[in-house]
Image (cartoon, rainbow, N blue to C red; front, side, top):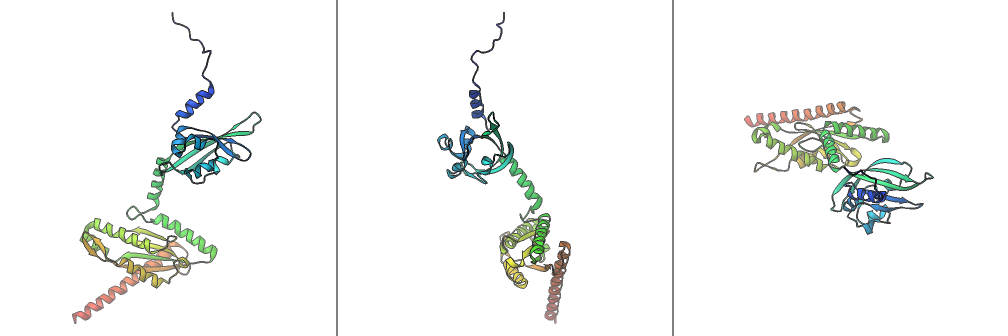
Length: 310
């Protein structure tokens, strides 16, 4: 006959079960005691100790900020563990772990309260979402940046234009839109193939980006067409000097397929608000000026050939 099951007369204490569960959790867990003037840590599971690189002695009884001073680097260190107005909150946090790697954490926090309803402890559970955040960041980057050069694409450029226009409208400023393309780019593709053409485009874009201040924008619109968005006050030089400087930088030799080559570019400039207030209008003005420069250059070359042929 089977022996009937009987309830244990010596059940495992709930506190012991809690410690087993919390210690075995792969997610960092932290509990602080809420005092009048401090949030002191009363429990940190092994996953949190591994994340922070701190020992139990370095953690227990200390405040959150003191962990930061021990080398656990956190963006926005004190807010998530000191706010007590909400019982439940989900907070994104970036930290640098014990190995110096940046980690993205999603923190869920809630209060423990006594019989009177007063908050006594704050429980913080951290979930590592570094991979998911990296995937999201990659999708955002691909949506707003050119895949070949890494520069801003049309969508991000339009957004930067709208920001620049709003700033100019508020402060009465102006900015320059410079449309740039590579002269005779087809011959580069014909001579070195599309891979060689791509290398030129990447080098060209990098040189443009290095030639302007970080607060301004360089974008690739497509093909060999690039555009700069420049605050006249920050660049601090008249357009003709800017064009001359860009042409000088772009004209430095590039090594392509073991050969040293030089490329040149043509620039067309429009100004906000003198030449228009809409992006499409400013692009048309810049494109028209760029075309006139190319046409004038072509006429001069034909005239030079005619003179040599006499």
